[in-house]
Length: 366
Image 1: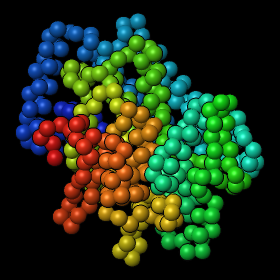
Image 2: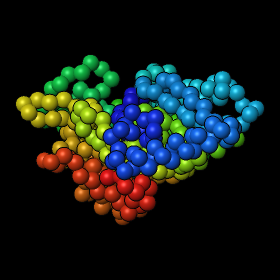
Image 3: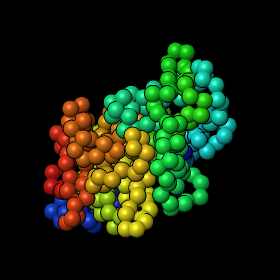
Image 4: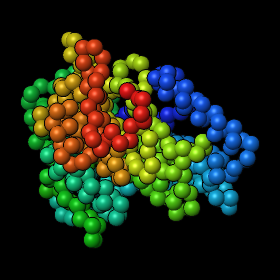
């Protein structure tokens, strides 16, 4: 599985993006953080002690922040448990490991049910749910088109495929060709050469799995991030809810567009500004519309989704990105999805935020 985007990160006094915040908000945050840090230092409160762990997984990085870790739990033990969980998920869902469950399914040309782990079947079922919700804008079988346009794992070839190539490849995709069941867990395909790629949902799932692990170990305050998808619960080391900066989707600069506060929710962002190529003055994004077989052409630059399931938020961010600012916004409002759509304009950027998203925004942030 390969990293897809960044777009969101913890936001605070130690963040490299903190200097880009509005001045009033920056001064207020500095004051609050400074006072709380001083109090924590003076009291030596173990409930505010921060433990940070990081590593690599799924072709990207992971970062785990824990506040108030149980005294009997050692940092080395926790790190080992995190690595063990991520290794297990990769063994189920990686398309880079030819021995993984998913790779074996993709290689198998049988159209019969194939028994799988409960986890793999659950993720495919969730992917199908989001595919139906977005009318196929999210589609875990779209990888052959991504490869055709040169955005796959092979050598990059910045060329525009012919209409014939697009049509032939499109005939091999479609989420409706995939089925998943929970009892007994299994998946199947009704076309032998259909392949499933969970890159746009598996990182969110891994985040949710790590948070379940942390909670099972008695940890109530944490921030877990994998490749830009994250989930936070409880408080940070200043005693406040976690604050997350949503990146302005510029091609070069990395400024904060808006700031949100989260507690017991997941956050995921999809955008067109980190992986693309240009030809004859036209920019071609890695975000492929499964219905057209071509990169999206609208002015939507990024979508951030907040949800109780990071798995679902991860998939929804991609689906809404494909749908675009208007159609995606209408769907998000209708379904009560907390989403922020950042649109590219001649003067820079503007955004549309659903009512549910506005409840998470920090007052004073743009």
